[in-house]
Length: 355
Image 1 (spheres, rainbow, N blue to C red):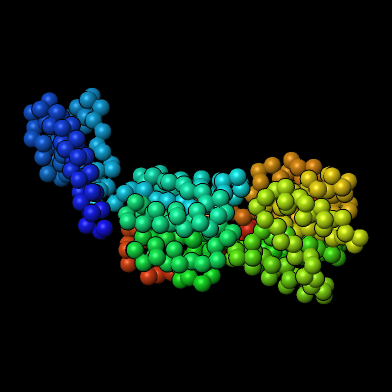
Image 2: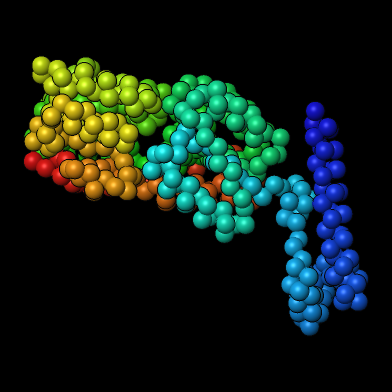
């Protein structure tokens, strides 16, 4: 299989080299120079005079000569492409992360391929398997909510493809990661609700497998312990990725005889579902229920009432992740060095938690 792929790539390279050679030949004929001299001039070689370089560049512009980056990448055993694998795009957090990644990739003259797993483990495995065999020079990934096994990711790592995990990371795998201070931020969020007068705070989560769920829940529990509020497992509400189903779960929670007076949503979609349910049940926010959520929702301040958020530096996460990946791509020996970058989130107080 390896030799088959090798010869396929070689064949493609020869085709693109031939196409490029035709363009170089046309340039050389127009300029009265050898193909070798034209090529060196285009690559700013010290062997070619400044005057000749100017002539070559002027003619290249006139003839609209475009060197083929794919062929050049194949000759260097590079694709000049990186992959970004994310669970969803509707989440504002991931949109901002991709913006940060794109900025760095453009500076490096790289293309970005974005893959959505739709929170499905089978899709994630299929995508990772597809990215092996040199299709991309590196991978940035945030795990889907169903990822319980990381065997497919370890296999990718063993092929030598640089891989960086961001936000949702595997806890059982040696790897480089870019995350935020989930534990500390969750502690602050829970403490914020308690200082606003809440005594019965529900914690909403989407997946017990996710690293962010585990860390955020630990921060929540630590804050309860500090303020001597007994932990109630019935207030840990397991939701999912279906909005209609989540609204049914939350309607049941908020219809209890003794219902929560505070909601801590570990992801923004659960905060939005809570708003819908409160509207249906005529529950007033923040008078009867206070809400805080991890969220990068651009319109959080426009909700009625405006939503108090733990806002992650999503754009910076994208930038840091991409920069770390490109360092690994440039220096293959960084593959054995595990870098753990942790960025700080911000608590932005708005009307949903007013005392």
